[in-house]
Amino acid sequence: MKLDKDLYRQARQSYQEWNRAELNARVHNAGSLTAQQAWKQYAGLWELCMKIAPQPSQQQRFERVADLQRYYQRMQKIEAWRQENGKVT
Image (cartoon, rainbow, N blue to C red; front, side, top):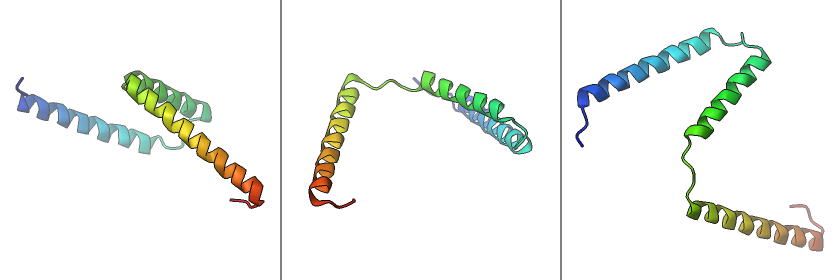
């Protein structure tokens, strides 16, 4: 599949213009949002990111669980050493 270079350039230019306009709006409106409005914007952004984020594969989930188990085992060893030696790490 061949990429249409002109279409790609137009899309990139539009995206850059949109980013500049968004930044200008943020600078212009800085400090004008209430805490509740800012929180709603943050929560909306978080929901969007969770919807479009790629889901980890089953292998990645297994690796994550194994990493967490290793971490907690090491922390238990450190805590046991600290209690045995009476020192704060």
